[in-house]
Figure 1 (cartoon, rainbow, N blue to C red):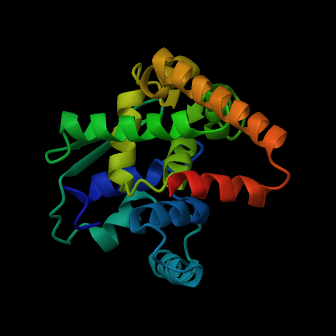
Figure 2 (cartoon, helix red, strand yellow):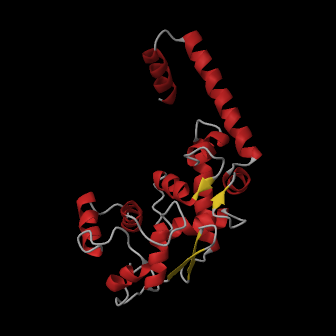
Figure 3 (tube, rainbow, N blue to C red):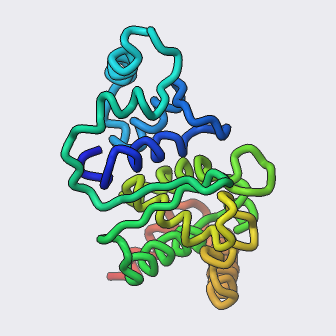
Amino acid sequence: MQCNFTDCDSAFQFFLSFKADNKKTLGKRDFEKAVDSLSANRFKKNDIEAFWRTLTENGKYLTIDKYLFRRFFDNISYTGCARVSLTPASATTIVSAGSSSAQWETDIFEKIRAIARSSSVSFEDIFKRFDEDGNGAISLTEFRNAIRKLSLGLSSREIDKLMSRVDTNSDGKIDYREFAAKFKPSELDERLKERAKDKLARLKELMILHMTSPADAFRLVTEHRL
């Protein structure tokens, strides 16, 4: 927390961003999700349980509000550059002095487009996989979960920043139009992908016609290479 945030309030707002409702207190499950995200799953479940017991004074409190949170975290020295606030739509906005590089965004978007290009499923199905509850829009939590599964090595702060760039109307969720605008491969990419599939299918047909086994095909290929 010291390395990521500018102050205690920003840290608390980050924890609140994992809630499904608009209440300003943290439940145990919200707390677990936030700690997992902030620490990149470095802590075991029993470790997080110990943190929770400490913060709630062994169960004296069922939830954690900003005042209880401050009792433990207000007086530490914050050295990070992330300032977090929640909009009425519960979208997390992070302003970071060190994370405004346009090249960084371009690289990340291109990596995700490359993954979409190489996928065997349609772009519409990729969107549906991000949209876990199937309501037609990708929430902040769903976006975080999906990006982490891509193993791009992004921090929680970077994922939230990416979300803010995709969520162009700042309503706290990503619809298909916003998703396609940032991540959908171009028509040229799609044509090249289809052409490659056609060539592979033709190659498979020729192999079936001329070879009696996969071993024959492999032997022919290696002979030509030699």
